[in-house]
Image (cartoon, rainbow, N blue to C red):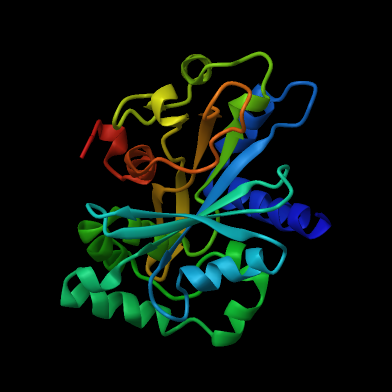
Length: 273
C-alpha cells in the first residue's frame, strides 16, 4: 500500500500545483477530523500504441490494480476502463482514451506528430503519469485540435496528469448529499458544472456525482503563455445494490459523459453541448 500512497501523493501534488490549484482550498473546506477519502482519479490519453490506455494502466497494475469496468462514449469518441485495488482504501482509477482514427485526417496527422515527440524511455517510468506534456505545441495547434475535440485540446495542452480527484461523500459526516456540497461550494465562490444538471446520476443508478468547472490556468506554448481550462474537483456518493450490501464501485456512462464537460472551454459561457 505504501507504493499506492506515494503514487497518489505525487499525482495530487501535480494536480494542485499545475492543473487545479483551487482543489487545495476545496479540500481544506471539506476536511473534517479525518482526512478526505479520495473515491477516484481520472487520466486522459490518445489511443495510440506509445501512449494508449494500456500504457497508462501499467504502473497501476504493477502495484496491484485490476481491470474492473469498460465504458464507451460514442458522442465524444472515447473508450475508458476503470481499475480497482484489492485494498478498499486505495482510490479507483478511471482512464479514458480518445479514438484518434475517428477524426479528420488533419487531426489524426497532428496528434501523431505530437506523440512522435514522446521519448519511448519516458513511458517506462511511472512518473510520466504526472509528468505533463512531453511534446512541443503552439497555440494554433491547440486550437485546431480543440475545435474537433475539447478532450484532445486539453490533453495536447496539458499532457499527462490527473484531470480530477474525487471526494467521497460516503466518508463525510457533515455532508451526506451531493446537493449540499454544491451549495457550500457555490456559497464560497466555486462554479459548478451544470451540464446534465448540477447533480448527475441518481440513487436508481447507484451513483450521484457533481463537479466544479475547471480552473483557468496559465499554460506555456511555444509561442507564448495562454490561459485555458485545467483540472476540476469531483464529488461522488455511491449507493449499495441492496440494503447493507457493498457500495456500487463502477461508473455510469451518462453521468461521466457530462463530467467530461467540466474542462470544456465554453462551459463558463453556459454551454451544455
